[in-house]
Length: 273
Image (cartoon, rainbow, N blue to C red; front, top):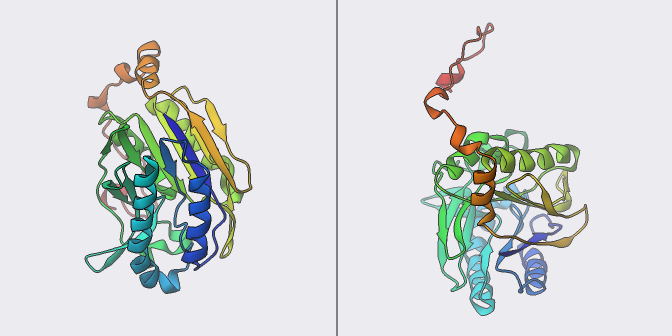
């Protein structure tokens, strides 16, 4: 499989300009089997016009579907604001090589520091997406901090997890660490696609990465706009799991989380949250 990661700078609230840039970079990467865009690449954190951008997303998806069909490749739309049943979700759409929708993922963990919970509705489904390339899992940015999500995907035979993001430069070491940790602990491929440049008050840190089931960085971008490419075989996942049998050594019956520490005054019980 050949993947191409579209590491781009995002202009706040300018979907037309952002789409033209994304289209140009996609056209430069049509030798790939799978092209992936970053989080909220069409509009950035332009929350004041979120409803308007969500309505525009349907037009953008149609254009990406045409690009996928014309070039016979899969596109993961990074994430876009999507209006559904009167609510706006931070959503990732997977488009197959026929231009059809294979599935979608709605961001489960909304980032409080950027006031996402005030503007988006959180998703509540963790389901792998079936494609001709294999089962894909999708997380979006802040989701990467929650290992339960990656474990849930890997337990359903997913061998590749995609992470579109707008991860800040000030915490880029966390981004790199989490991508490698999730690949190692689950023995699968992790592909993280980050943006670059300033978006509102945040500077995105780039360093889009492809990480192998052994935790090896196969390809990595820097802090400028770039198409990050990598070639790999999903069959490597089975080889790694047979060579180093962490997966078979799990004792799942013992893994129920029990909170044994005393609660401080005014602190809520984590099991009730």
